[in-house]
Image (cartoon, rainbow, N blue to C red):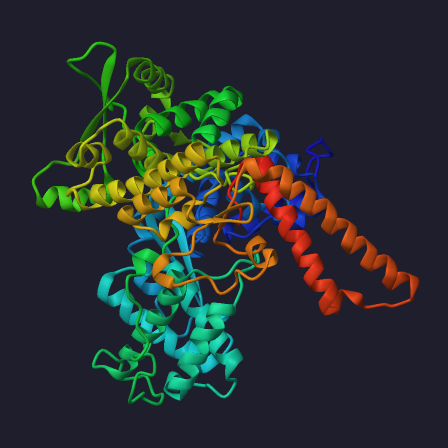
Length: 608
């Protein structure tokens, strides 16, 4: 709706506006028939009355447990009005902004304190608030997502007990649970209560989750599946136990069908954070100047420190300190993940690491640049987001991450697997750890830099890096010595001592086969497939290289001739469906084997 001027309000329309304001009602009817700007002109005739009206309307927003903002308050007065805020006039917006700020303080006081009033068995949606980054954040538990009403009813009691026990709820855990519960009822529609679930249902759920795919087409991780199964197990334990609410009148389970399902070493099922390859880092660095000044600063902080995301975004205005070294400063930060452990050990809230002075100077410049934001809010954090009409808070991390990903897509930056590199801020931490280890840092030094309270995690990094570098060294060593393509996966089957023997065998050519070497272990006995070249071509134990390339090229051309002749004969005799013929499948598979080897040798990469 445009804010152009129209004729003034009639006396009848003025009376309608006054009546609506007295009853704290919206002005939709009058604004629909009259230009909004004319209505606002009338409202400004009595600024005291206007302020009382806006305060009452803001209170209705709070009563609905909706976070206040200038836009939200305007829409509560003029529903469906979408004009830009600046078109409402400075005088009106000043009064409105003052009311919004007062109501925001009130919401901070009541929203978290009144969370317990939302925990009702009769409510389908629980709107809960918590503090996050200096602002309120809504956490909604929507029980309508559980398709079976009786299971939904039991779930409410479980989460009510959880809230009474720990004072909060976990939305990600709830999402995991309702997905598992809906999957259960899809597998067995006869399940109406948790007591109906049998061991067969439990096993069927496990197998279904292992096959089930997410919206993006990928499979659920084993860690996520374990989380889902264990969370359902805890619900049934609650329904069987003494914590069960007396008013819950549903069948009580006598056994937990998930008790027999257990998961071990779940940490190993977590997808490890990837180290950013040197060539990927080099390409991103080369184009990082295209980032905005703020995102470039964030990028340089992450890449120079390896700090966790929260540690960077919660840096405070006094985070830069001098050091005893030339061109080096200290960066002071709170390692939030281990803050409780630090307090137990008396280590204090803050940790310090060294950063280059030029980076420290840029951080100082940004601190000075954003001083006015902090003075208005009282927050000590330097990375604040101040969206017009909304509460100031610590900025969101996704704009930075998306900007780096945009560079990766724009310049087609790919990893060793040929796929576009999937960037996350956590990768800097692992990359810094690798760099420190490669430059001779001890476990204790690594633990200090990364802010670990013990050296166990640092030792784990050491183990990962040693394994990675050992595989890289060995493959490079064999490639340089024998000009062979040898993958890290192939070498992993040989312990250190056996690799030495493998080297001797290669030198003595005791493992020589057609156009390469064979990696079958002596302990496994003689190869049972050594009766034809065909089996060596498609065998994962074949190790070949550039010296044999002319032979492979000749074999490839011969095989193409054979396959093309077969196809021509089939077509000449009007034979369809030949792709399923055994003779064609064998010859075509051999052709693919030759092509894979030639491509691997030409590309200088390990053969799959």
